[in-house]
Image (cartoon, rainbow, N blue to C red; front, top):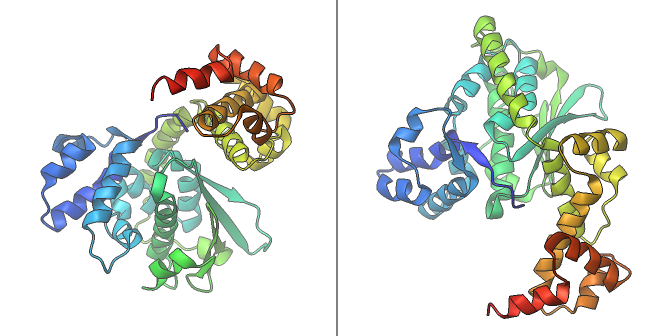
Amino acid sequence: MNKQFFLPIHTLAITYSFYLKNNHDTKQFFESCNITPGDFLNEQHKVPLNSFLISLRLLNKLKPENKSLLEIMNLYLPISGLGRFGFTLISAPTVNCGLEFLVDNSNVVIPTLIMKWIKPQNKNQKIIQLSSLNCHMEFENEILDVMCIKIIDYISLCCNEVQLLPTVYENMQKSEAIFVDNCVQIKKAGSLRQILIDLNVLNNNSPMAHSGFFHTNKNEIEVKSLKINSNNWYTTQTTRIINNKICSNIKPKLSSVAEELSVSPKTLSRMLKKEGGSFQLLIDNETCKQAKEYLSTKFTIKEITYLLGFKSIAGLNNVFIRNYGVSMSQYRKELSCLY
């Protein structure tokens, strides 16, 4: 995706804390990530997604060989490290209240992940599903996995019988189903994660519950979350799904995309229009982006047309010209002049 994401400063605190704890040269960290020590004093400070990815590459390079990146990320990301959001979470009256707060406002913590409740098959469970906007490069799995572990960490604060085993890091890398215990289970399927939680766990009270603090901060954070959500959320999510389908040679359909977003096709069309676009416009944009990628390869224009699901070169060419003002053959000719 070409959208530039900005993340909260606490995302870089993972690597920064590692540097401090292990006496590494923090100057390298600040210069590489293009931030200053003072940035950590402002909880509202945002950093580009690329700075976060650079910080993880530094962490991956410096971590002990006998530790996985996932284990190090979890170790240096305590719930309290999430700032006001983290303290609000642990002050929730019950596990259920805390998890609902987390799921509803997860975009405040990390806007490049999607967290939502899905309907369980077992009426005695609730399920949180996590997915990604596929913009974390080589760290997609670690970022999804560490968020799963953070959720389990939160539950374990309130429920003594839920504890992570030392083998969880190894299991997260190779298993499709990880049993934390009889009450909580993590399921993996490609870029999806599901956390299955027994209802009896959700009723546990938090030992640090503070109703006044929780509700005051919850309301303020919800306002912040709504502002983030209002910023072309449906366009962003629809673009991601369309792009994935085009790259997988699957024709995007309004009905299937709407189903993935848990809305009706009519609602999705209405929201896209409200955000200044349309479903067909997004398909055309993503198709042309993929066509540009193919035009830099040895594929013929006829082969590209077939790969993108068009019956004729003219049909794809018309869309391409409408988007870029030149034909595919003209674009390829201009591209060749650059090399």
